[in-house]
Image (cartoon, rainbow, N blue to C red):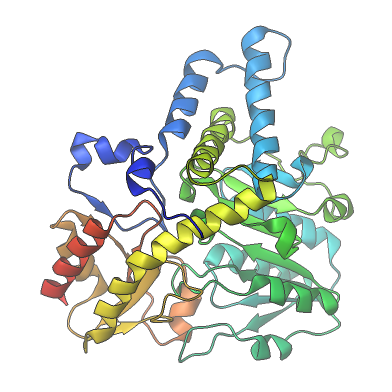
Length: 409
């Protein structure tokens, strides 16, 4: 029998829940950025206090700084079920994708084809469409206009023997569906193409088991996984060796430098150790010890089971309102707790404004899913109201949200 999440234990690991200035504030904008765990905050503070020097030199604080940064890469790779040399750090996912765009611009030939979707965040669309200026043909895997979902049949229509890669999302930051990426990747690989996955809106619900899903490139952001503002990129070692280096020429044979043309904040890299400490602590509190790969699956299930318990009453409430249209599924199966909706009575901006007065934070607008808004008939400048939460959200916060929404919508 799977354990239930010990919510009190979990919330004790987050300084925000004991911060006086945030008393009675309900954070429902986790898709934009989660609260950091105390282990991350402590690691970041300690690094700035004791080791804020250039790392990897021979003097003591420099050696310690380098050890912390190297440890972060190794420990994170274990949770992702990949090798350390396949993990890359940058300031953001947008920067990571832009670096890889430049590599593909050199690598691909005029007449080659790529596929993007219109369900993704713009960071995993716009950068790839720039390849058109190099003669690359960009095709779009369109969502179903009625459901906002990506369907495998629509991929068949744009996939060909000329397709070099397909870029798609593990979980839409608007629709909330957890896409069957492992199945899609098998299909894409069978067509001879690469799979580039944006996991930014998925990773906060449990680290992805990248080694299992077999993506060629996978992006996510640590600031949505209880950590610092860093972009994480996984790239298969074979692809790393094949694409042209984007780093300094003298680092062209260093796997972790080839696609890092600028250096991210050393302290933030070191602070990833704090996030891993948190995940390790939560696992030890709930489970017997197993391999790192099983840990990844354990925590994902633990987090997502807890999230579904809170997601169900919210979806039920919104589904019963005649003035509300939910974007995406109204059931918890294969769905993250990222719930976007529109109302026939009140604008998304005014919903957000009214909730803010009740000390409830949500997002409104297109949330950088501009093309998705256009595809499903929503004015992008107005967009949607978006509620997003994670495993540390309490049932009391859900109840507070529903009571407030009931008076607004």
